[in-house]
Amino acid sequence: MSRILTMFSTLCAKIFEAATAKYHETNDVDAAMPLFYPDHNTIEYHLFKKNWIDAVQWHLEDIIRNPKIDPVEALAIKRRIDHSNQERTDLVELIDSYFWEQYHDIPRLADATINTESPAWAIDRLSILILKIYHMQQETERQEATPEHRMACEKKLYVLLEQKQDLSTAIDQLLHDIEQGKKWMKVYKQMKMYNDPALNPVLYQGK
Image 1 (tube, one colour):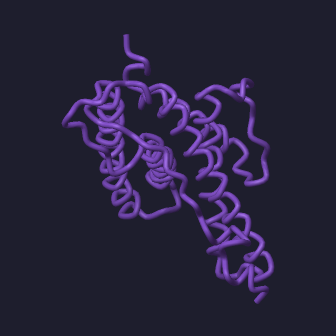
Image 2: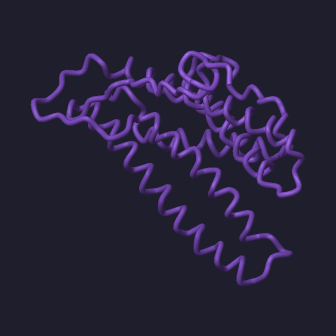
């Protein structure tokens, strides 16, 4: 029996879509994340939190692009985005650790190869894609927009939905190949330097 649920991408998409919908009930970057999954040690909890972080950051990126924004507020949001990026990276590495625990003892085939990205980073892209689909769908329904705008967005939405299908298939295939020993994975730390006072020269030189 498979160690990972067949069609793991289906579970991811279901949770990402639920988190995206829940965020947009308030559409507030300061709203507290609801506890859909009270047990913080489950993969479902981590997936929900992943998309919630992405949804908040998506809207922070929108806010900071307001040409009339106060520079002090913009700086505060930029630092909040930096913190969010670090939190997002840490969470992706945690999800990869989940897969590592599942697969690290599987015998590797002689011709096994390593993938260009880990399962969790592919899942990270799926989370962002779910947000793109949600917002593009909103644009196709925006009544004050021109018919031309809505039609253009419908075409973009079609492409995004096709991309979702392709990415989901690729994620499931990657997990299957790892499980079969055809591919193998490592959990690399991203080692972001700009947030680390010991590695960012502007910070450790006190400039």
